[in-house]
Length: 336
Image 1: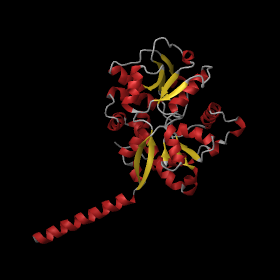
Image 2: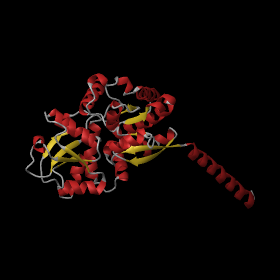
Image 3: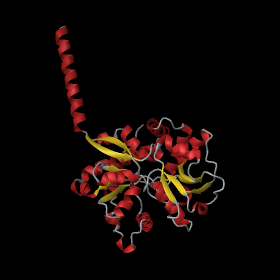
Image 4: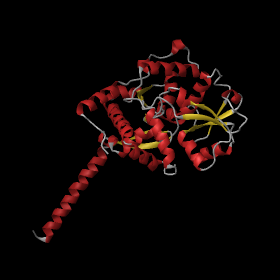
C-alpha cells in the first residue's frame, strides 16, 4: 500500500472515530443534579458518575453544590432537575410542592450535635441559643429538630444559623463563634487531626437513635408523569452506584477524595464505614418508615394530620423496585 493510501486510510479512520465520539457526546442529555456536601453520604452519586453509570443511561450530569434549603426551591423553579436533598424535599411536598421522592440510599444520619463551650452539657442547655447548620431547611436542621423532639424539647426553642460549606464552616466550628454546631463524622476526624476540636461536649449522636431517610432523589411530578422511563434510567444509574459503593470500599473512598481532596483519608474511611452501615438495602425505604418520617416532618412544619398527603402522592419507589428486579435477573454485579 502506498504511503498516500496509508495516510488516507488513517485520516478516514480518525474521522470516523471522531464522528462516533461526537455523536455519542451529542446523544448525552445534560442534566443538573444538586449535591449538598462532598462527603461519603453522596458516594452513590459520585460512583454513578465515575463508573459511567449515568452515561450508560444517556445522561451527562452537572453537579450543582447546594444544600436542601437552596436546592429544593431551585428544583421547584426548574433550575435543577434532580435534587438529592430528599429530606428537604419532603417538607416542601407536605406544603404542596409538586415533587415526588423516588430513591433513598441511607436511613440513619451520621450527624452529631456538639457544644463549643464546656458550660453547655445537655440539649436542654441550648434553650434560647443558636445552633450552626449548613443551610436552612436541610437535613442538619431537620435532624436537630427531631433530636430535640425526641428529648421532650421544643424544636423552636433554639435558633438555626446557616454556616454554608467548606473552610468557612469549619472555621466557625473550631472558633466557637456559635454555642453549638451540627457536625458529621468526617468533620470530627478533620478537627481532631488539626487539633481544633470543639471545646465543648458531645450533646447528641443522631446516628444512634434517629431513623431518617436522607440524600435521596426528588423529581418533579410532572416530569415523572410525562416520561417515567427517562426518570427510571436516572434511578437505575443511582442504584448501580449504590451497589458499587457498598462493595468497593477503597475505590469509593478515593472517589469522594477526588471531589474533596482536602479531607483526610482516615476521616473519609471512618465516615464511609458508618454511612455504609446505614444504607438501605435497595435504595428504598419501608412503608413504615415512610409514614414515620412523614408524620414527624408534618409535626415539625405544622401541617395538620388530616392535611397530610397520602404516601403514594409523596413516594414512588416502583421504578427502584423494577430496576432491582431487572438487575437481579440479568445477574448484574458492580465491576471494579
